[in-house]
Length: 144
Image 1 (cartoon, rainbow, N blue to C red):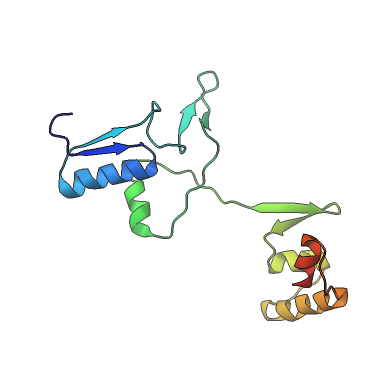
Image 2 (cartoon, rainbow, N blue to C red):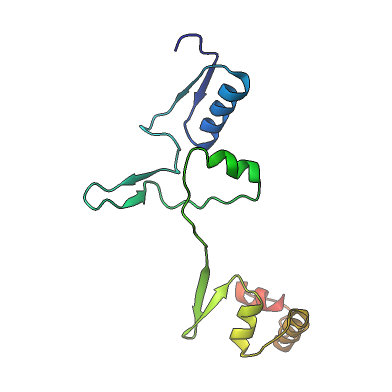
């Protein structure tokens, strides 16, 4: 590339961001190369030709940030799907939200604690088990 001062190897999120910042902030030409035939690194999706359904080429990626300027920058180049990540687990035929929170505790024990009551309740349950020398992860978790 003629008069190119910068070479970025890798067209993943970092490479693309650095290249864009050099081009916009310094007004200089940048050459970005990658062994793949697309930009974005592992955060890449394609459309299945037979079904028309978009799928993630390298597995699902979840992007999140609280930094407004990062969000604004990325939204110049892409669209995001709305997504809320929830983890649940099943224990003895019942489903609970994870990680453990007040709703999990109330549901598991069939009670209705207020936030300020939860710590004392958990400490009393732990004390009932009286685990002084935990032998596995479950026992360690209960002891804490």
